[in-house]
Length: 303
Image (cartoon, rainbow, N blue to C red; front, side):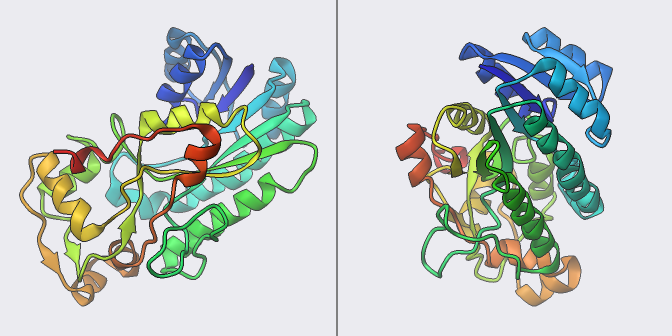
């Protein structure tokens, strides 16, 4: 299959390109820099330097390459996790405006299928249950989380707005593994080492993670599966009070401190409390059943 990947040089880009090529697909990767284009070419993909905000350039690229499937992995995320509030507006703009140009161009160029990066960690589930693909995003959460949830809700609404193209929403868990925040020497590990990420209150917020390579594998499997929504998360949804100390041990950091909700709210704001105490974990049952996907166990729970 001829596949066009936007955001091809992001965190999931490299393993996704590799997985596509291993499975015999012809790949065109869209990026914004010459250096990243050369990396894509070295991997074996065709590379195009295109600004997602340039609607005419995006449409030209898709009409020229005529892909059967388009994978939208457009993001604008910082290297340091603590800088995310500064990047949030730009990230949402890229996903909505740049992604909108990509989506419309995919339809105009005759692409058959559009795969959209979505969220498997801002879902709202009934207490004591895991979110499935019918679960909504939590648009009534803390301010920053609610804004992100609204963006993902709008992305999914756009994805399924046209009968002219098959839509697949990929609700990824928090990425971990090489070149992600949750990896030794990277942002989250450094924060834990510096005692900047405490267990908050009872730490009952449930986080769902996914290894970056497993996310790439699931994405490739979704190219030929039935359209719809898929939670690509591992099978170890864990409360913060469990996964955070285990992660600290995994990266060789001291155990995280404990802080009350009031303390963290005063220092870091309502979003930090939400992440630690309100998140709903997600179920991977559909992805395993329909895609035949097999996520690995969360690495730091295996040591």
